[in-house]
Image 1 (cartoon, rainbow, N blue to C red):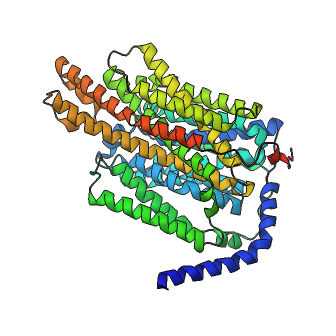
Image 2: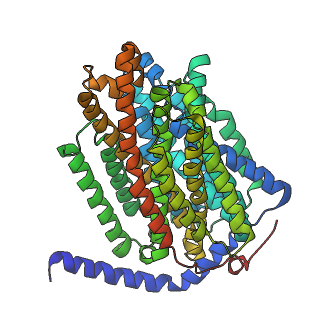
Image 3: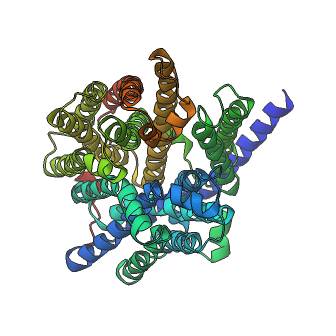
Length: 544
C-alpha cells in the first residue's frame, strides 16, 4: 500500500474512533440544536425583523454602492490602476467567509456570532471612510467583507430560530425583496453621496444603522446560550478546513474577476489560480471527510441529490440576477442615452418584479402545500430562460413597453426562485444541518454572481472589439470598452455606429444567459420531494 493510501487509512481509523467517542453526544447535540430555537411573536418579532432588515440591506448595499463612486475615489487618490480592488476586495472576503459562519454560530451561538459579524462590518466601514490612501481603503474594504459575509448568512439562519417553519417563508420573501432592492439602490445611493456630500459617506452611513441593529439584537434576541468554555469552543473550530475553503474560494474568485479583463483566460496567472483554487477545494473535501472531528461541511450532504439541485438553482439564479444588474444599465446608458443615475431607475421594473416574485412565492408556499417550492423554482427557471431570450432581443428601436415587459418577466422568474430555493434546501436536510446549508446556499449564489458577471463581461468585450472592427469604426476600442462615456467625444455618425456595435455585443452577451437559465430549470426539476413537511418540523414551538 502506498504512503498516501496508508495515511488515509490511518486518518479514517482515527476518525472512526473519534466518531465512536462522540456518538453518544450526537443525540444531545441534535436536541440541543432544536432547543436553541426560541420562537418569537408580536412586538418583539416586529422589532427583530426591523433590525435584521436594516443590517441585511446594508450588507447587500455595500456590494454595489461604490460602483458610481469609483471614478471620484480614483481621482482623489490618483490610483486609477488599482481602483477596481475597492469593489473586488469586499466581494472576495464576503464570499470566502460566508460558509464558515454557519458552523461558527453553532459553536459560539447565534447572537454572539451575529454581533461579532456586525461589529467587524462596522469597524471596516469606519476605517474605509477614514482611509488615507488607496491601499488602506482596499484592506479595510476586505475587513468589511469579512463581516458582511456573516451578516447575510446569519440573517437567514436567525429567522429560522425565531420563526416556525410554516411561517418562515413569508418573512424570507421580505428578505429576498430587501436584498434585491439594496443591490439596485447601491449605485444610486453611492452616486448621490459622491455628488452632493462625499464618497466617504458610502461607508459612514453604515455606522448609525448598524449600531441600531446591534442594540436590537442585544436586547431582543434571547436564545439559549451554547455550553462550554471559550477555549473549548475555539478548539472545536475546524481551522484547517476553514483556511483551505477560504484560500480556495479566493483563488477561484480572483481568476473569475481577472479572467478576460486584466489577463487573458489562457494567461498562466489565471490558469494557476484556477488550478490552485480547485486543488485547495479538493484538499478541503479530503480534510472534511477524513481529518476534521467537527467539520464545517458535513460530507454526507453532498450525496443529497435534492440539495445539490438546490445549490445548482441558486448558482444559476445568481448568475442571471447579477448579470442583469450589472449590464442592463449599459444598455440604457449607451443605447438609450440615459445618465448613470437614470439608468438605475430604468431597472426599477426588474427589481420590483424580483421583489414581488419573492414575496408572492413565499406567501404561496406558506399558505398551501399543493404548490411546493419545487413547482415555483421550475416556473421561475422557465421565466429566467424566457426573460434571457427577450432581453437578448433588445435593440436601439425597442420601445419603453417592450423594455418594461421583458424586465418584468426576467425579474419575476428570479424572484420566484430567490427564497423558495432556500426553503427547498432546508426541507431537504435534518435540522442539525440547517445552518451550514443556508451558509453554503448563499455561497453558491455569490459564486454564481461572480461567474455570471465575468462570463457575460468577457463575451461582451470580445464581441465589442469584433463588432467595432467589422463596422469599420476607426476609434480606440479599449477606450470604448473601459468607458461608455467615451462615445460622447465622437461625431453623430460615429455614435450611431458605436450604438449598433453595443447593441450587437450586448445581445451576444445576454445570449449566454439562455443556456444557463435552462440549466437552472433542469436543476429545479431535479429537486426531490422533501424529507420533512412544515408540520413535521414544528414539534417544538416555544413561543415567547
